[in-house]
Each structure stands twice: as C-alpha cells, then as structure tokens.
Image 1 (cartoon, one colour):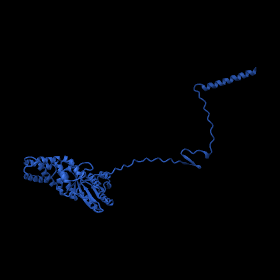
Image 2 (cartoon, one colour):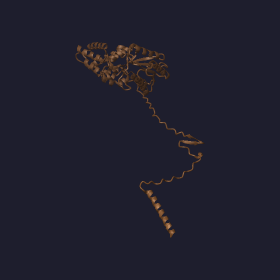
Image 3 (cartoon, one colour):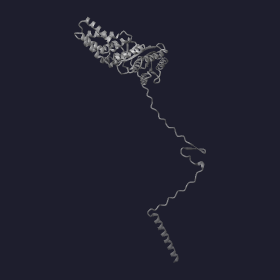
Length: 393
C-alpha cells in the first residue's frame, strides 16, 4: 500500500512540474527558446582553403585577378563631304541672264522709253542723264553717253523702237568697251602654277568669290590650291576650308593673326609640290591706312614671287555699294597692280552702271560678275550678254 502511494505522489509531482513549465512557456510576453545551432564543420587545412572572391590562389600566395578589359566606346565615323563636280564656267552668264535682266530692268527700260519719245527736248535729255547717274554710270561717262546719243538721234531723225534699241545697245557697248582683254590668266608656267591674288575690303564677298572661282576653275578641269592668307579673320580660313573640301582643293592656312605672307608662300610652295595649275590666295581686307595696306599686300606679293609669278590681282567690289565701292577701288589700285575686277551682287542692285564707271576710272576690265548666292553663280563677264540683259528682249 505504501509503495502504491509513493508512485501516485511521484506522478502528481511530475504532472505539476509539467504544467508549470507549459505555463511559463506560453504565458503573455513569454519568449521561445532559441533554436539550436547546427554543429560547426571543422576548419579546412590551410592549403585547401578557397581563395577570396577577386583573388586566385597560386601556390601559397593569392594574387588579385585582373578584370576583363572593357569594350572601348567607338567615336562616330568622321563624315567626309562628298566632292562635287562643278559645271564648266563657259556659258554661265548666258544661263544667269534672266536674273540680271530682272535687276537691271529699270535702267534699260527707262532709257528705251525716254529715247522713244516723239520729241526729245532738253528736259528729256536731263531725265536720261538722271537715269544714267542713278545707275552709277558716273558723271563723266554719263555726259559722254548723252552727247553721243544726241548726235546720233539728230542724224537718224525719226526713230523706230528697233532703231532706238540698236542705238542704245551700240552706245552701251562702246562705254563698256568689249575690246578690253577679259581673259583670266590661269595658265601654269611649266612646273610653276599660275597665281591669282584676291584683294578687296571685307564684306564685299572676297572670300566667297575666292571659293567660287576655285570651283569654276576645277569645273574647267584645273587643279587648284587655296591659300587662306586672311589670317586676321578666323571665319575667313574656315569658310575657305569649306569651299575647298566641297570641290577637292587643298587649303593652306596658318595660325589666327599669323603672317599673311607666310601663308601665301606656303600655298605657292604646295602648288608647286602638287603640280597644281592655279594657286588662289585670299588676302586680308582691312583698310586702316593706305600705308599699312600697301606694306602688307606688297610683302605678300614679293614673297609669292620668290616661288612663282603673280599672274592676276583680282579686286573684288560689291556692286550694291555704288560710288563708295569706287573709292575703295581707287585705294587698292594705288596699292597693288590690279589686273581685273570681280563685281559681286550684281543681281541685287539696279545700279549696273558701275561696270562702266569702275572700268573708266581704273582702266581695268571687269572679268568676273557674281549674279546670285549659289555656288555656281560666279560667271566670266560678257559685255554683249550684259547689255542685252539691260535692254531686255
């Protein structure tokens, strides 16, 4: 009996202890027992250990792994402008005649209307004189023309429109002088290229005319080298570089503000080296003082002549400046031996009479005319085409 009671007591005690443990485990705020950690693996021997990331075990030493080379980012390819093939210069003025006729209509039609009147009294002749002067023919050439026309009208007596037109055409041609040599001298001398020096005030279209002339000569089958000797205007060299790239002409340039004569010399040397037909040198167009201009242009010409002959000195004039352009022309004519005139923007003015006045004042022929902003709008001057455009059909 006593043994039975002892067993019961032990069971009760165990039950109470179990209940107390469960109460402590699940009471509010109670904490679960931490999970048991898995047993740690024994450390590997030194020689079997893994090298850390980014390293490679070599023998007993670890070396840093060289990362794979990055693929370089390729720059976009340089776009080389396609070289253009310009049309030949022959016949350009005929093709551009319509533009000239539109701009000069007031001059031609005005003179024809006045000369066609039944009665030509002093007032009409004064009007004719005014039309000519307004068109920048110049005072002296105008008086000469009016005197010649009055004499011929008296001889003719009655006049038909055809006779008036023929009369005026003849007089205008006489004043323009079709017998002047308008040949552009661009024929090389043996192994030495012809050299064309382009001069004129900035703003007249000098650099553009240089580029257009190179384009026209290349269209005629000549090899051309350009010299950017206007070193005082950075845009001039860049502009000439663009013209050269378009037609495949080499451009020689120097540092901004550098010696223009040095650039001219290098361009001439390049022309000889490359067996070019023509070297065209664009010069600075500053007009600070006549002495400074004379010294600069004189030096450029002398330096060129150590290598080759200067065959042409082209003076670029803006036709829209009228008599102001004439004064500039006279300064340059006193400084260098101008051999020809390139008259730009002739399609943009009704003052085509400047062709007559500039030739009369300088005794130098107009050889080239600019009749638009297009790359092929520079044409050899043709007196007959010009006069016919003035008078219309």
